Amino acid sequence: MTLQEFNNLSKQEATTALEKCCVSKCWINHIIEDRPFVSGDELIEKAAFIWYEQCQSLDWQAAFEGHPKIGDINSLKEKFSQTKNWANQEQANVAEADEAVLKALADANEAYSKKFGYIFIVSASGKSAKEMLAIITARLHNSTDDELQVAMGEQHKITVIRLVKLIDELIDTADLRSYITTHVLDTTTGIPGTGMPITLYENANGVWKPITVGVTDDDGRITDLLPPGKKLTAGKYQLIFNTEAYYSSRQQKGFYPEVAIQFNITSHNHYHVPLLLNPYGYTTYRGS
Image (cartoon, rainbow, N blue to C red):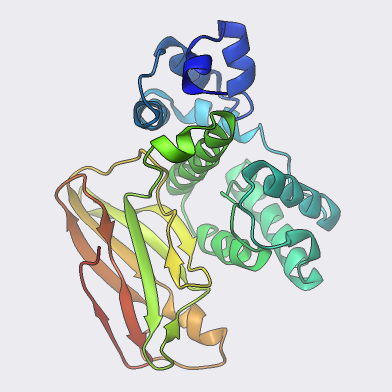
């Protein structure tokens, strides 16, 4: 449908449509109340504002319940097969992933559910089962409060992907970029640093708090660290690159188990923070 058609839906029709994107009643009701939207950017920015500023913990966890629970390997395959159809961006056939990886992912999901009390939420579009295993492994180390913040961010990534499917023109008229992106280049081989877990942190009153976890793709990039429309306040942030996991997966050793790059956010412009890496040194710069 078009944005205008969405604006003209009855409350019940709009509710039914939005439930396909996110089942949080708080989020749905605020979106409906804020109509009409004059542009795709306004809708995307308002969707993020409502989710982060007007919804609360119970609303976020209610949204998590809209996803099927991961249990055994068969249900795991089914879940991500459905995600592929929803997002229309899945590059890896998770249902045909290595059985050992699927088993490890199912086990990690069980551990996650026991620790945090809700299912593992991740924006699966474009990610393989192996990449999602790296993400959940990293997130299992989070505290309960920190993980809720990370999980709700992933939920909103999924919501935006589905909004784009719901309202066709958003793909062409709205800014769907992540506010922060990164890229790893292995300068020893001259090829992208793929499969590296990276965590984005913010400095909150002197304490580093995780915001999101991603894994570099086949081009060594993470383009979806933040959901579209989500901006960060001015302050100090850092990206932690898990170089130990990267080199271990290649049966190599590196001098630095991780690389921490701190930087300042001063505006709502796009920030690109790349890493040029070799086993015994690294370089970074403000990219574009």
